[in-house]
Image (cartoon, rainbow, N blue to C red):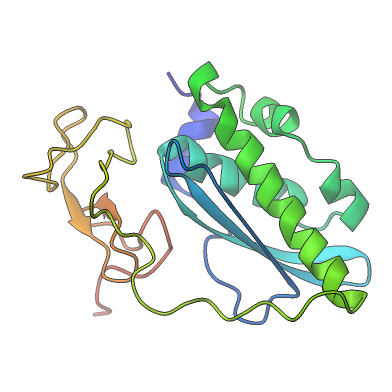
Length: 196
């Protein structure tokens, strides 16, 4: 279903995290699938010196966010604004038709962060608010799906996916389900293992 490149960016996402002193922040979401992406940028001159993201959603959404961050880092603002959903999907070696909306969300979130930066620079917007504390991923009243295979998780037991049989734990920072034993949450990048 997914290319090796999609799986690599999902299993090993690049540039995950929150940037407290970001020059611009952009957030987009899809209420139908529940994917939510926030991009943070730091600008040096006319270039994106750093790009970070925080994504809550399926494996494709995480892979897309990772790829968009890699494609944008080091680019001029104009070059980053030219990144499209099609170019993201091409870089990932393709996405299933039902996941193409994820590539659109990633590019849109990046574009919103750049617009936020430009509005701030022109005095049209206040600095981005610091990231909200507390749980950013609340599953109450909505179905939760496996971030690895997108199968719906059993409401009574979200510790193991019946589709791919991966064991989960809940991230203490965002509340999302992530693979048990991983060092960091696949959604928000928060550390999961205590340092030895």
